[in-house]
Length: 84
Image 1 (tube, one colour):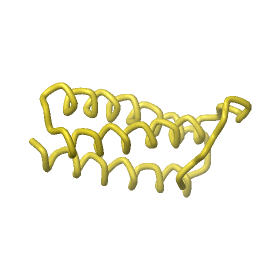
Image 2 (image 1 turned 180 degrees about the vertical axis):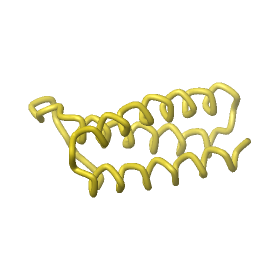
Image 3 (image 1 turned 180 degrees about the horizontal axis):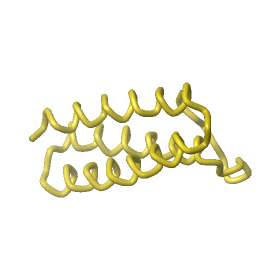
């Protein structure tokens, strides 16, 4: 479900959730390679924003896509938790 979106892409709740998940993935990867307090905090902030975006995606009436977003978010949260 990785998205190579651009500025012309419509910003519906599902695309916003995917964009947030992409940010989480990058932030967690950075925290894994540079596990400083600052990097971990930035990853936690990205997770919080993605959680909100995924909640909004659930309201968009596309349960399959929203469930996939939930799964991706949970995996990234587990990756981040392993650093703490």
